[in-house]
Amino acid sequence: MLYVALVLFFSFWGLFINSIVKKKRMKGFYLKGFTSLTFVLVFAIGVYDFYVKNNGLTLSLIDNKYLIFTLFIGLGLVCGLLGDLFLEVQYFYDKEKDSQIFSGMIAFFIGHIFYIVALSALIGFNYLSIIIGLVFTLVVAVGGIVLKMNFGKLKLPSYLYTFIIFTMVGQSMFLAIDNQFNLFSIVLMLGAILFGISDLLLAPIYFKGDKRVSFAIANLATYYLAQLFIALSILFLI
Image 1 (cartoon, helix red, strand yellow):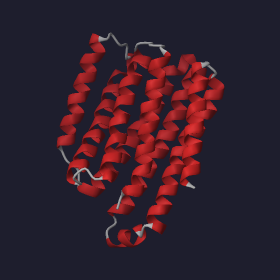
Image 2 (tube, rainbow, N blue to C red; image 1 turned 120 degrees about the vertical axis):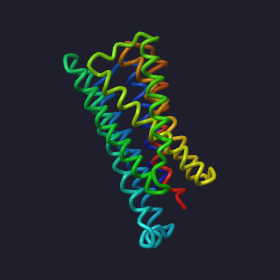
Image 3 (spheres, rainbow, N blue to C red; image 1 turned 90 degrees about the horizontal axis):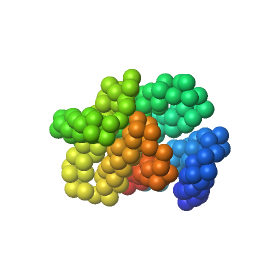
Image 4 (spheres, one colour; image 1 turned 180 degrees about the vertical axis):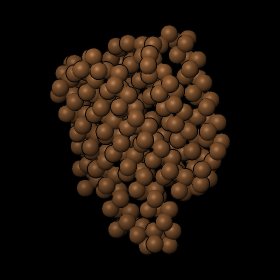
């Protein structure tokens, strides 16, 4: 079943990228939705495997951290699905573009909070993650000035979003250290890092008007791999 879901994921992903290249936005809206839905499906299959096939239910009865991790990773992925749809709607309503971007940003912001809760359930919250979040927020602020990005009304939300996503990235790194870089923590950390990279690539597209197809493809590649790795991580939890 997992292999079927992965085939669907990569098929929809490829078709979605093709629709972007050919500027078929309406078709792209549906394909993006299906692609995002499949990373939620991949996670659902992983949850079944963990709790039914890998004795995860017994472990969860002993320690509820596994249940908390599962619940909040799932909620984070659903927020990603919603955020994807909000961001895609902007291409149909030019006058409401900022509000659609803001709605997508809110969905992803909440999703990253869910991811942080999930990671913290396993190792506790490492406050050094906040430092990492602040450092990257400063980097984005300075980079925005150097690259002459026009954040407009979304400047403060963009900085807050940068802070929360790189705090999540920091937490994933400390999880990897705490778990001595086992397969589970590496997969999850790679997902978090790719998520951060995807958003750094997205900034010039939204706030500088960079229309290069290569930028869009790089953003979509890193983003969907990020969500896929996060969804797959539960398979290696124990």
